[in-house]
Structure formats: C-alpha cells, structure tokens
Image (cartoon, rainbow, N blue to C red; front, side, top):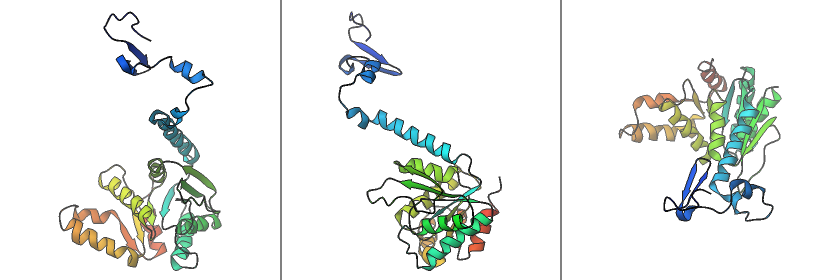
Length: 249
C-alpha cells in the first residue's frame, strides 16, 4: 500500500502495472489474496482470470498443432446425414487431401466434419478435430486422432487459419458461413496470403455467389476481384488440385 501518510492527499496502490488511487485501493496485497485459503471465489469469473484461460487455450492449441504437416481445414454441417452424397463427398475429400500430402483439420463434430476426418484416418493420414464448448456439445467424432477442445470461438478460429494452408467448405449452416467469411476477410485484407478457399457443391453455394455478385458487388460493397478469392467446384480432384497448387511453402 502506497502513501500511508497522505502526503499527496490521496491513498495510492500499485499492483504490477495497475495503479489504484482513492476509493479504488484494495485491502491487502496480491500475494496475500493468492495464498489465503478462505475468501470470495468470484475471482474465477472475472475478466483478468478469463484472460489467463484464453492464454492457456492458445498455448495448448499451439503446442498440440505446431508439428502438423501441411494441413487443410474442411468445414461443413454437423447435421449432414451419413447416408447422403455430401457425407460421401466429405470422405472422398479427406482421403484425397491425405493422398496429396495434407493433414485434415475439422471442427471435430459429426456430419460433414466426421466424414472428412474419417476419410483422412482411413487413408492413413493425420486427422485433427478442433472442438468447441456448446450447450448441445456432442464431443469429438471417433475418427479424430488429435483433438483439442476450446471454450472460446476466436481462439479456435485462430487455430483453423494458423495451421491450415487453405479451406475446403462443404455445404453447411451458420458456423460454416462464419468460418468462410472470416477466411475471405483475412485474405481480402491481406492478413493471410496464398490461402485458397474452395466451396464444394455448386448447387448449394450458387445462391450465395449470385447474391455476392448481383447485390454486394453490384452495390459497391465489395470489389469484383473479391469474387476471385474463392473457387466453386463439384469435383473432388479439382478441389484438391485448387488447394494444392496454391499451398506450396
């Protein structure tokens, strides 16, 4: 506790880089509060403590994924049934990516994500799942060989981009669209370079592409060249070729 004699006219306390004065001064010291066996447990719900959790998630993610080979992140709906062409396409994409020398990263869930992980695992490749804590959590699918579960979406998003050389995006919902537009924005703004994005399934994605061209670009909200940031295909071999030719390190 600083300034006990009131020479400055106010009480002052320094806690590392934080300066507290007047009625913001806290009783005791940081060490005392750390070592006390009794006391309020609300501190575990404070923002400073959340920062430590966030930091730990980055450390765990970086540690788990740092030695991955070149990888591609594959996105798609958790609701894709197994007995559908979309699921089969996911398996074939996972297999083809491994055969092209890539690890496969997904969100670790069921549906299209499971399909891509399954294809990668059955092809003898590295199958990665990056899960997220959700109210309807279903856990990592059984085809994941390296799995990391996250509390925070933004930490998980960093891992998808940092450890992947490109994205293949199967038909999906809001989570898939979130990852897609995150990647498009990063490429458009130059935050990442040489990052191919392939939309698989022209029938599914055509309405979105039409809207981007006929509304967003037409009204000047984006540039015509922004439509070149992604490719659309229905062919597995073409999808893999598109990410392969742009991902040499």
